[in-house]
Amino acid sequence: PTIYFTGIQPTGIPHLGNFFGSIEPWTDLQNTVDQNILMMLSVVDQHAISLGPLPAEQLRRNTRQMTASLIACGVDPERTLLFRQSDVPQIAQLSWILGSLQTTSKLARLPQYKEKQERFKKGDIPVGLLTYPLLQAADVLTFKATTVPVGEDQSQHLNLLGGLAYAFNKTYQTELFPIPKQLTREINARIRSLRDPEKKMSKSSGGERSRIENAFATLTTLPKVDSLLFQIIDSREKIFEKCQKAQSDTGGLVTYDKENRLAVSNMLDLYSAVTKIPIAEIDFSTWTTLQLKMNLAEAIDKKLAPIREKFEDLEKNRENVVFTMEDLEKQKCCIYNLERLIPYANLKNALQ
Ligand code: TYM
Image 1 (cartoon, rainbow, N blue to C red):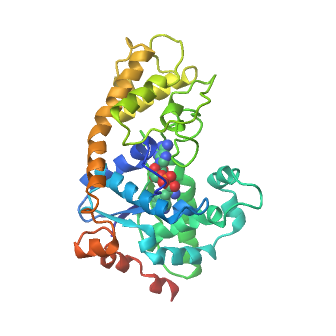
Image 2: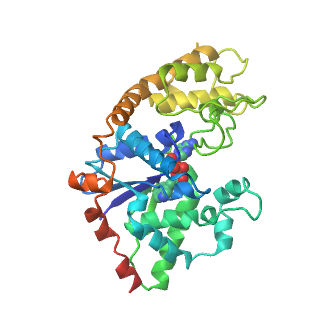
Image 3: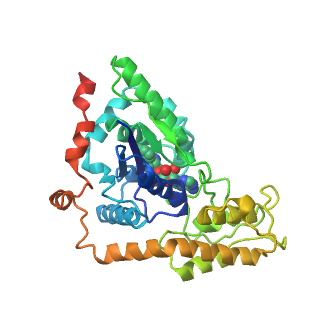
């Protein structure tokens, strides 16, 4: 069987990087692929504590809000098997087994580990940061997923995961695990950070401003204040405010020139991602940089308005929205429907 699997960390309300890199490609797939394909989307709450513990209440709220955000963005629980990672203990179990096939030095060489460990003093690095990719590999392999739609930044983890599936099969002389394929949509593979375009937009790193603001940064002065974040539920006012405050340059009319006008080019990239119009087909020759900001804000608001409404609706009526396993099973809703999950979590075979 063909199984698509992806995961998203409940570190907060998703930002535009998540939206364009992962959520929108997912809903597009969900709505177009063959009905026989099993679509699985996991809110990976255990990954969200890899940088250290969170208060339980916060993790629960973040998980709920991420789930609501996904549904608001068009993930359809009737079509996508949407579930919380920690509800399937077999995943953590498999992750431990995969650990026996992996070395610490290989894990420590992964770019994301190297980058994130810098936030800690030597000696204070959480174990979970190092073993994070094992848990990710286990997510995918537990269900024998064949295809993993993700943003470009996940390639390092996907390569490692392929290696682990191969190593497992070889060690135990089995063909249990398919080697999953990464599926990354070229056009939005990497939504650039607005402040530091070398970095991807990240919801767990940096302050509020880093998200949308980063894509507007010039190569010269960067805003000191780091207090704005571009979330999928930002109000129209907030969107305009952020776009207005965005860094630009004094180059007059808009041109697309990544080398010399990175900030302006990033804005155009984002505009293109939002409107789904390829850069080559956007007629920006008469736009000033200010007009670009306004057009961008307008486009973002148009895109996010229905999502924001749906999210607010789900949050308001959350008493009626099923988010616990018991509720969902009672409602025969496929979120957390373990009956459907367990056939794929056939670890017993793996261990024979
Ligand atoms: P996470 O939670 O950081 O991000 C979720 C998804 O959003 C994509 N993404 C981006 N895409 C384009 N531009 C950006 N700036 C950007 N920022 C984030 C990510 O590529 C991802 O697809 N390790 C994963 C979660 C995970 C997972 C899995 C994914 C856990 N288990 C199994 C796939 C399969 C992560 O941290 O994603």
